[in-house]
Length: 268
Image (cartoon, rainbow, N blue to C red):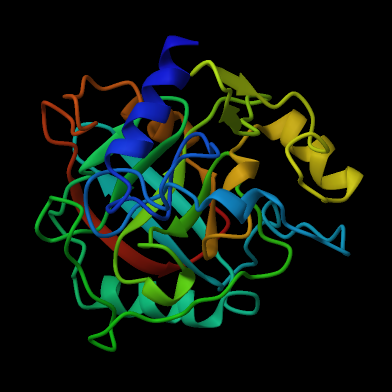
């Protein structure tokens, strides 16, 4: 409970920086969550997402020869990510292009919140910088069939998917751990939604059940461009999520990407 309340405070206080990756949606929160330009904190209405399909692409394994992303995190290990160019064409094109330019090499994860997400990809290390391969922000849209299950990879933004740049986040919840968001009550306390219906999330039963199994942050759905999914290395993602941070959720000891490589999947 203390963690979730801290997340609410962080979201409200830093609503300009993590608009793409926040922890708890409330009726009074801003559209970003970490005092910077790009973030992972959702806009208030993002949770009320309508979906007429039960297709889930997140956990499809890559095929032999398919391009995947491999993030090597110093002192932690490798994270292997399946990319979804058919569902998130611009998002994948941007990430692959930046990686092949060595743009992400030696950058840090500047914002880490346990049981929520790890955010990086900003060359300034502040959450206010970064750019796309096109030099300006781009709109990656809301890809169909890709959700914020644990291990999902998406772009942080500053209010909408049209402000995607280079910053991205990885959802780091545990299996079966998912957050539906909440709202402030008149007395100033916080009420956390208990069901998808109560949270205003009109999603298929299959998606709800997958969240209950895999964990994730469903209240972010509808606000951010998901373009990848970790299929190997979630132990690394969760270990990163436990590092000690300051009041702005910045790790006290740098968590650094040694490299981000785009390679062909060999089945290993």
